Length: 147
Image: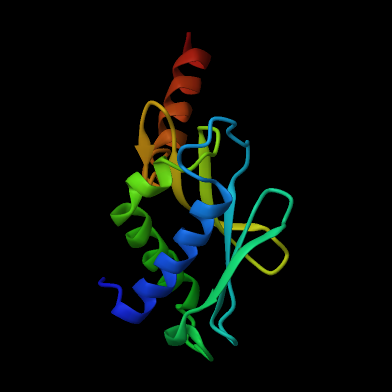
């Protein structure tokens, strides 16, 4: 997927607003996560902190009145691609590590983790991390019960 120029400009605008709130060279780092909240009827994309305080907002024209069922998937893919392409900018924010960028719904419930910044590693997409864990645990329990 490729982000079009207009969407890229709006996302970069949000990142610049975020950089003003959490300047890269600030020594006093703040503990928070950042939430994205997208609205398909208005195309609005909001950035919120842990206290649900609005940090910045913009409108993504391609998302205005987006009535397709894949809206959330489009938002997730777009935000993940943007985060990957701007990871150094996100890493430099004066936010205490580790922190995450998440997509939330209207009730501020997490829909998807977009990006995680950690001092040791950066995990962009870790959906496969837990894959197969149930089978491994079942095999372990079966072995214990047999002994």
